[in-house]
Length: 482
Picture 1 (cartoon, rainbow, N blue to C red):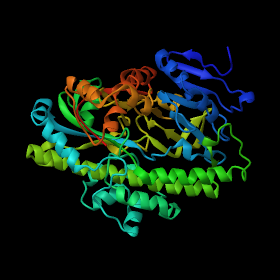
Picture 2: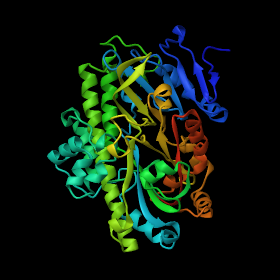
Picture 3: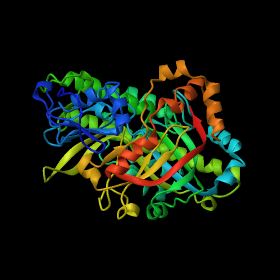
Picture 4: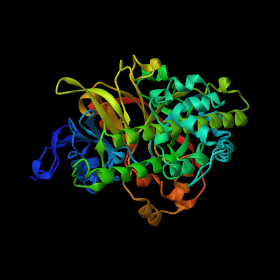
């Protein structure tokens, strides 16, 4: 067997051992069942993970989660932990859509009640929430107001009437990561981002109205306020053009600095700099600014979602019990404490298309869930289920406290456009009882459910490994897309 071929080391676990000939400093660990593994082998996912294993300062192993697929430099569904003192930070290890993430709202409405007004509700949501490529939000920000957003995150939105402090209590980092510095952000990023605050965007971003279809963990579901048969809302978006430009800017900075730091990599898309270098600290502060932009963005969309429900059902927010369950990022890098070879170490953990899945009693988990474990949100495609999971101790041993972020693509957008029509996709969704409003044909066709892996299979791998276990299955009934 070739040293580059993954070998099975356990149920749903594969490994490529470290190899000096391939410049790999640590093994690659892949978590997948056999069909998911074969999908990864059909593109550059495994090769990219192997390249990640060659980055100076990487520890433990380079991780590929069951939703893994080819990305820019790093595979999507990848996790890499670097020593915080001696290791690197890589813009490609976070990705272009910094703090692309998901948040889940619950309600006390039943499926029957919502179906009776589903088209009216989805139409109201679609008209209330700006979406599409380059879409602009409803807020005009001055230079100093944008600075406030970049520092305060979700709290900027709450201070301006978009929700309450209860929402911040159930966001990763409470929706405001410290040490963001707007001075490290380019004018170009500002110009792209300022008009887009409060917009959904395009691509795989969405807002879904869902019903709770199955409960698998009664205690965890009860703690989250999730009841079978009731309606939830899942919002998936990130930092828009702002985060994209921050990534672009610092990829160029990193590429130019690699010679200075004598860094040699098998793929320049992995461009990185020492975490504690001037360039590394500048990227981190700019990236943190984008994290805060995204949390504020999702908070504003939450406010307008609540308003739509109030209008359509003629009830107050409290009557509808529209509470935020959780908000989690899945494109992010930050310093965390992990045990490596039996010793606690400060690591900068890159999660690109990966969700934090900490077990109970980690201080990073919001107080409300700390003794339970971290809620994990795994969206599928617009025609398949999404899942609520619960972080478990095995995640700390296997994946630096991480699990999958979604189903993961298996088909390119261009191939989806060639193979499917808008009418076909809409009819398929309608046959499943799903009503969709989208701005463009491409917004429908590129996101056809057939372009994605089986989210249930992805979740089963996580559940069976004890990385993050099943709490509830959510099935879409209404979708809005750019």
